[in-house]
Image 1 (tube, rainbow, N blue to C red):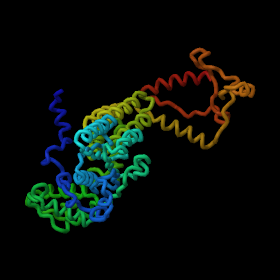
Image 2 (cartoon, rainbow, N blue to C red):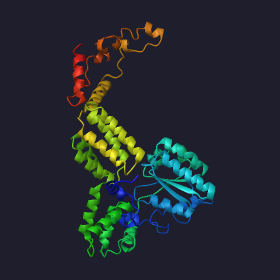
Image 3 (tube, rainbow, N blue to C red):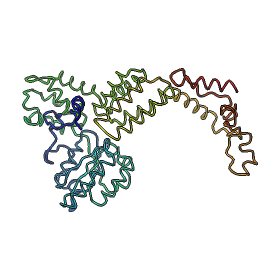
Image 4 (tube, rainbow, N blue to C red):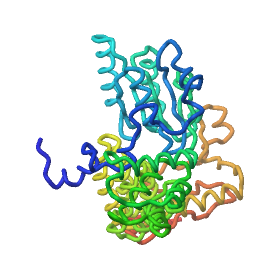
Length: 442
């Protein structure tokens, strides 16, 4: 099926096939282990990864470390050294279907040609237990060598069975000296780097960028690229330009910093304020900065109950459907059901009664403890319990007109308490009318 030009334009920037359009950090990825910078505790004669190869080849690994420390690059280079086929998957986007496809191709290569496959699973902590269990027998049988990458502690996020079949390799944040090597290399490389742009970057500016990157090579190179763009051809990246670049990178988005929470807050408050334009802007801001789409979708599911509730009961269905749709199609197309859901939630009538009702009921539970269940609403499955009065006097609502009979179902000390007071918005207005009519009969 031919896709429309508009759709292709919208998502073509994610394809990344033209190296000229790739970010500097991507263009400067090391192509050999000799080019790899940092992680001296792992690489080199007698070090952990050298010993891990041993006489049996590359073992399954879990690469655990902060962003920008070279997990993906290291996986590719180790795979190349092992002479295996590199098959990458993102645990955020891939499901069992994609996993089975990779496994099937690996089995075929192994059977027909004796070629080994390295399955690189980025953000392995995003795979749920069922997906990890499905992968386990193929790792155990040697169909694939697994290299998982994660920023999270694998002992919490990876199943014990899978973890026991992998070596955990801890990557450290890069030292400033390592980042300086990468910065200097990028400025001197005329083919992949910035060497042909004739921009002067004094030592002081290079050092400042290395320092502010806080051990993240991707952040250092992205900031450098922006600084050079700000200085323009023939210019100088002085202290002011370097600071401007650092500020722009920080203001764009920082998933572990204050701006992360600011942007998420703006997204939620825009939906709560019934402003679909602002909501979609903040959502696009998060997606383009690399936020986990499932995080955004989880916030929308929560919002559907917390801020829309029964003013529009369909809102929760829309949010959950968007979550499932994204899991099915992934990025980039998954942004479309996300957008549809955000628009729906923004324009839906609002009610926070799910939040306030639960808070009120919880307060009563904490205040009164385990109050006794009234006898007439207790379960009475045995003759003894019936003889003791369990269920005695219970009135079955369907035996009465309108399937309603005035009755108290709360513990005696809470009789007459009101936790839920519907608002006058959307469908909840109808609920308020019905409840008022029923309560008037008490």
